[in-house]
Amino acid sequence: MPVNVVAKQQITVGTECLVEGAVPDGSFAVVFEDDGVTGYFYALDKSQSSQLIQDAMHIYNVADVTDGDVPSIVELGWTADAYKAVLLINDYVHAVFDFSAKRGYCRTGFPPPSESSGWQGHDWDDSAFKLFAGES
Image (cartoon, rainbow, N blue to C red):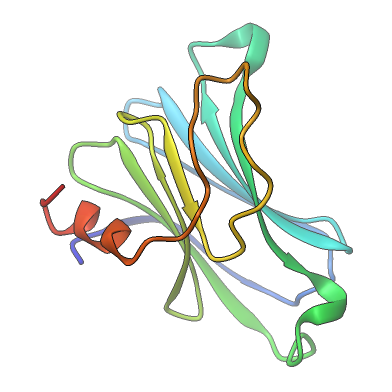
C-alpha cells in the first residue's frame, strides 16, 4: 500500500488530541480527533471556507476500546495523487477518504454522510485498500 505518511503521533485513547495531515499543496487535509469520549476522522477541503469540514466518520467510542490504556500510534497518509487519505492506528486501517469520489469508508460505517454534503457512503469495503494500490 504506497502511502505517503504526513502525520504520525503517539496517543492514549481517551486523552484529548488532534492529529492533522494535509496534502503538500494544502488544498485537502484530514484530521483525527479523540475528544475524550469518541474518536472521529474528518475530511477537510481548505478551498471551502464556508464549510471546511466536508465529511466525518466515527472511529471508536473510548469506553469500547479494550486496550485503551496502552499507547497507540496514529498515522495519516495520502496517495501520490493527493486525493485519497487513510487513517491507521497501530498499522491497522480504520478509515479511508476518497476526495475525488467524495466517498468515505470506515470500520464502523457510522454516521451516514449528510445528505447536503455531496459525500456518499461510510460502509467499510475491503476494496478501499485498492485505492492505495493504484487500482479502483
